[in-house]
View (tube, rainbow, N blue to C red):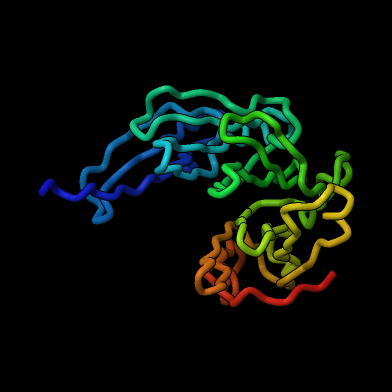
Length: 241
């Protein structure tokens, strides 16, 4: 019998130790014990932020927040797991990539979902970047953009329950962060009427993940301790419309 395929971790290094204009992000890969560390994509100059792996198709996808957080110049890229065949699949200037953040995969429907922070949107597209859809919009104007309570950051999809979750982080040290959910299969107008807040008064909730089998929602929080700077979990809670 042959050796089992070794699982690998993929790590996004955003190079935050350098000023914005001189950052050179990269994607690293290693075995699950931390050995065999490799750089698979480097010289990433447009502030990469979120990454997700599609093992079935052998692809990785990542978001780029862009060269300026004040303009709509973010993007989404795809490459093979070894870094080859790198392509921009959602171009700068497209609605929904002002500053795209966490990205995730809905395996059953074969869709990408992501949040656009300063764009104040929850988005969806096909794996090739086509059919870009706005699922939720919390604002559109420059005046609304400065309200960090509108900033959409983390995303998770629960296809068996026909819902997706997202975070709106709120201002720093404001304890106004919230986690929302809405139905996957609904028109834009119907979805807006069915939005539920499931957890509120959080320091600054960021990324999300779901364990469908146990019905557990996980999230990170970048706010101040004790509730912030933390990894958290909760059973899928009831919501408030």
